[in-house]
Image (tube, rainbow, N blue to C red; front, side, top):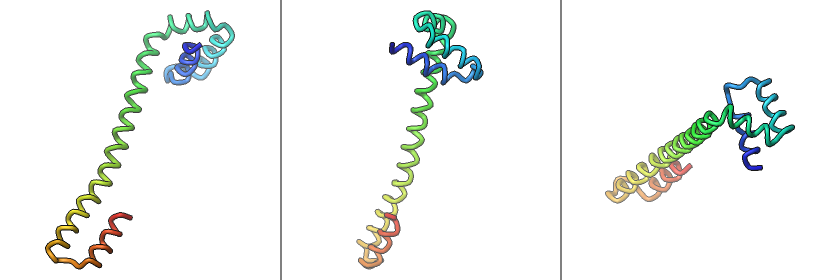
Length: 107
């Protein structure tokens, strides 16, 4: 049963199949589950594994890009806050100026 659902997902994930090809495989797999699954695995089994690996890589790259983007946005703020803290510690800016600048950065 799990294999059937994985094959249905793979049918829709396959970019090489046309719309009619996807419809045909889907009908075949649903109408004759045992025979359809066996035929699909024989015909597209190796490509199915490659598509799964590619999908996982794309998800990992998207996650890494999101983490990089989020860390870069937060990293700039952290550096600015550290610089402001140094200015305040040296007495170059007052407490009120520090608070206003901090609020600007945190927004």
